[in-house]
Length: 263
Image (spheres, one colour):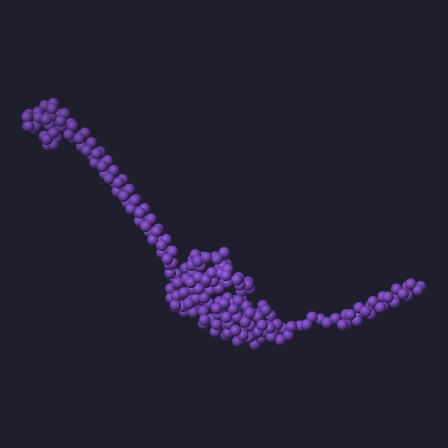
């Protein structure tokens, strides 16, 4: 009996202790107030696009654009997480053609900066079109477009290269000026093509001469076989010569082939 009472007493003590502990435990503190977040922005390709980014945020009271770092295509936003989630940011700036690049930027010493000369662009929409043609290439970390005729691309050389960027720009209709390497390559290809064409022309000329020479000898053979030789033979036989000196046929006298014409 005493053991049963002791067991009940122990259970009561443990339950009371648990209740006290549970009552003293505090829930995780809820994050309140404005939160600051710096993100990489897709579509920030010209200085004019900074105004478009500001306009896209001004219409939403729950988010504030604190600053823009155009040199790195980054922007810092402030917002209250209770009223405005992280995922909502993409929806807000997407209305103006912007996006959030979620992958971290590699170290600068792992990236290559390349200037690609292009034809002069007419408007901001053309600049955005040129940017969009390369923005989704894997390895491109940042790009800006100068309307006066220049694309500056920052990329990971282990994932992409100049040829891929130029190809995408040309496919989009952007007139990309040829690099010295491309010009040198084209010059070499032209020299090789001209040499090949010259060789083919000379070969055709030689073959034509062979054919012409062959036809000439065929004709000569036919002529002597059918006209000259029969005249010589009949003239020598003395049968029917017009000059009554030999018996040759007309061809014998006409072609001066008879041995007896002047006899």
